[in-house]
Length: 208
Length: 208
DNA sequence: TGTACATCAGTGAACGCGCGTTCACTGATGTAC
DNA sequence: TGTACATCAGTGAACGCGCGTTCACTGATGTAC
Image (cartoon, rainbow over all chains, first blue to last red; front, top):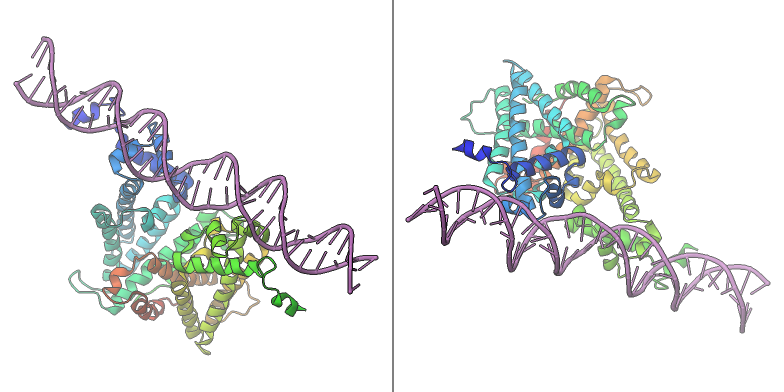
């Protein structure tokens, strides 16, 4: 059944859909979001510039699929980061924060794409679901810190706590990626020492 | 003397240099950074597409001048924000933070440009000086909180405090501008209610 | 006060660029009988 | 088992787009004598 599908290898291409996604990820990791072009993706997949439209409709369609997968990986990373914090709510939050920044700094192209509404189909249901799930991890970590159950609706303090936690990790990652924190790392390897400093930064954020 | 200069009105243009800067600011405020093009700026100034090169060398040159001015305004805004906090170091820091976010949300195009290394001449000495001065305001506010004199070199805790303060306001502004905080403001006017929440967010950041 | 000349701001046409998408098509595969 | 046909993935040429920059130039102004 699905074995049939997999066996197929070069009628026309084999699995162009996945090849296009892989090529896009490759571009994102080597040249960043700005380096992406649909024609380049097609070129790398060894296919004509019109071929991608067949699978994704448009460039935005392809990027939306790539961003959706990135969000899923991101969610996993956040979850694992929180788990590393054990039972203590504060430790879980900080563990998640470290995972957040690590993801952004190690995969800047994919991370940036996740925030580029203008390049995506922002109403795509899969994309929305995947991004909402990532947000859910953040909210859950804050709920633990504030000792709120999943049922309680978010009061003002909880909203502020969530936004602040998100802001500090997103801000840290963005500043680092934009090279604004370079003065702090002197001649040393950039991400290494920045990541060393991160726990100290997060320790200053204490909601509640 | 300089009256001579100002009297001049239409030899060729009068003051094309300023007209180009004004046109760029206009584009930034209405269409954002992505909406900028050198040809469009020339069009708005009523001048041929080759004219700007005469004054700024290149598109990056023009944007660098615009960004430099934006940094100067930004520095003033941060200073005024801190002053609003009076004598209390914590209040000064929060006042500065509010000013930071207000600047970003009210002038998103200029604010975004300030972070677009790829569009600027990052080694331009005026740009560097202006951006360094803005950073200086932030550092000074943190020094007060930590009771450090201007002479003391920054230890690890101080570096973390600075980076965290910067990250939380930059992150807040970026998330807001990317529309990521929309769920929190429901049907209400976006920036109004977001800015209301900001002090609560900043209150959770307590360095030292 | 008049003239010759240098300066310099702005012209406008042309350059080459790569882009996303469209279109009518081809040709290999899968399927019904 | 063989044939006719439908499906559908991929082709490749062409579309129009606006961009930043270049180039040889023009024509108004400022300046020296």
